[in-house]
Picture (tube, one colour):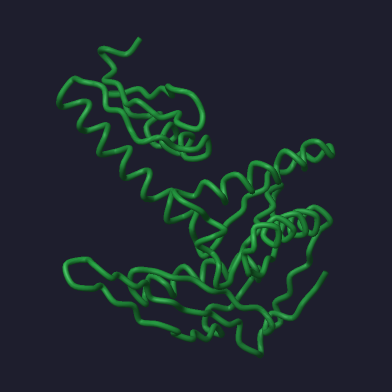
Length: 227
């Protein structure tokens, strides 16, 4: 499939308008390789509200449009088309009103979702979107494909990765300073991998997963007491 870039848009939210614009721009770049950032138009649906004492927080909501005049196009490969159709069927099945686009680059198919029901698609702590990604990869491998599929929504993956990496570093400092293991909250396999990767080169700590699904979690252990 090929579509003109000026028909593509990306929707995102953030704590501030600037953060929402950044997330929308990143998503739009996934949809339109070679996108001219200067051509992008932003539509601010909501500037957000912080609320009194943190109560009643409303995120900023922005739509980024690939403006006319750019010649960029997206050519959807067979792998990208299959992944997009699979995620679309899952989204329809759970009642999430979203638009889905996909692009393949260097053996990785990135499926990007946008729309008003991203919260439903992502789920609590990302459990739903991680499950969709797991299923998409399982179906793809069953069909003999070797590419990896990443399912994203409004820059969720980048924000969640940054958040988990920060938690991992704080836990490592705590474990190293106290000499005691630090147990993190239960996480999906995708999130546990992010924590392990974030600390794999830290000489002061080691990480290990414990517990059983769906309550499996990461323990950050000082190196001198790791077993």
